[in-house]
Amino acid sequence: MKTFYTADHHLHHSGMELSFGRIVETFEKPERAEIVLRRVKEVGLGPVIEPAAYDRAAIERVHTPDYLDFLQNVFAEWRAAGRDGEVWPYSWRHRSMPMLDAPPSGLDARLSYYSFDMAGSITGTTWQAARRAADTALAGADAVLSGERAAFALCRPPGHHAGRDFFGGYCYLNNAAIAAQRFLDNGHARVAIFDIDYHHGNGTQEIFYDRDDVLLASLHGDPDFEFPFHLGYARERGTGRGEGFNLNYPLPAGTGWLEWQAAFEDAHARIGAYAPTALVISLGVDTFKEDPISQFKLESEHFLAIGRRIADLALPTLFVMEGGYAVDALGVNAVNVLQGFAGA
Image (tube, rainbow, N blue to C red; front, top):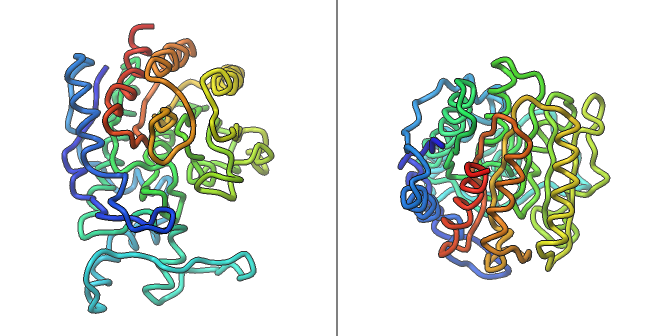
């Protein structure tokens, strides 16, 4: 299996984050990708390939041009305003406030408009890193389009919390959604996204919620207690043409393998019934029992079984790296999924 990876991910590193009332070192740090890459090489998964640089038009198929302009230019605006350090939003719309028809003009107002949390900042090179993560996903999709059974896009920063015009949850561009759209733009009529990250892929849901050409199935911590909150309930099934094509499986804290597997198997069957011609896996392994910001109880060997069952769908498959913050086990867990798939 080909792995697509670029060291340009180092261009993004938020030094800290706010976590349960404390300022801590960010959990989403560059060593995550390096640990996974090292494991890819240790097991001989396959060649590691630097992705080409893609035109922004491929990203505009998912994200709005005004949002992309904002991401590209906001750090320079921040500096021009005489501000030091990293770019951070600090207020957000409340449900009592009316929605705006267009982005506001002020810097801080636009930061609020285009974000939903302060899990990650924007540095002077975040835009370049996010663009290269999107390139990584596009290169992986193109490999599958060219006939590879599967490919692995080792993306960082991750993407599934980023919507059409907002960032949050460590995510700036939605790599999995960009890849799914790439499949659709190159001959595939129906694509499934299977999000097995611990956290709900709220950005992916927002992007495809009114569409029937992408089925999203997401297993995640119940939004009553888990980030990103507010979205990810089972009742959210899509709207308009998309009704019935958004499948959420919110699970309680402490969920172990048997409970998680039951939800996985139901989603697996629903994906099979949808009969897609390509599959994108939002590969989060923060379901692991020792993950520091998650509350599921999967063991390392379970990720091998997950990979084998994904292979049983017998679809051209792109794995896109998302979360996983138990860094000592991150490489083993992520690559176990890939080895399980490859060996099935």
